[in-house]
Length: 213
Image 1 (tube, rainbow, N blue to C red):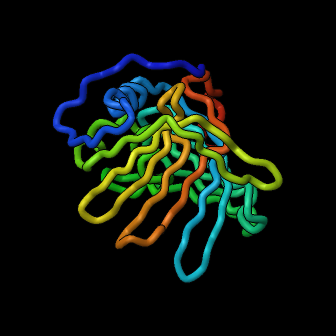
Image 2 (spheres, one colour):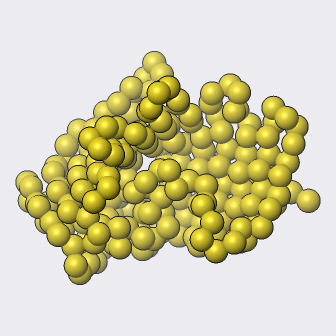
């Protein structure tokens, strides 16, 4: 359900506020804490020696149900990752192979490379914002090309400056859901995350998170 959320006071944050956006971080934190389910199509670019692009569907029901299915590139299409409780299942279609393992506390979880978007769906937006110097602008048009079309949002732009990296985050002005994340380290762009479309607090099918026998 696309909806605006109530504001929640978040203590301990450092803000630089622009264009009357004083309540935006609190609203984002409230949307994060109020998340019951999330489904999105996500386009991600990883920069470095070689530019790598992937696109996948991402479904999440807190605290520990996650499903990622790769749509592109062709060599990853159909690859599936399911996290359900402490069970992690990965299917590699290119090898016709399935891998199952138990996740231990402190393990790296799929999706963490999405930066602030991952913190948001985990309900940890408030804590993450509290650890950064936050600059807010907008709402502003946020448009980016996707194939032969374009994706557009009216969004707030947040710059989250930390000790080791900076994230530039765009949040839908209607729902406060992150729809774009750029992760910088040492002034260089490392990862670019774009949400093609999403559903916030819509009912998801439990079968999507079932670990195949």
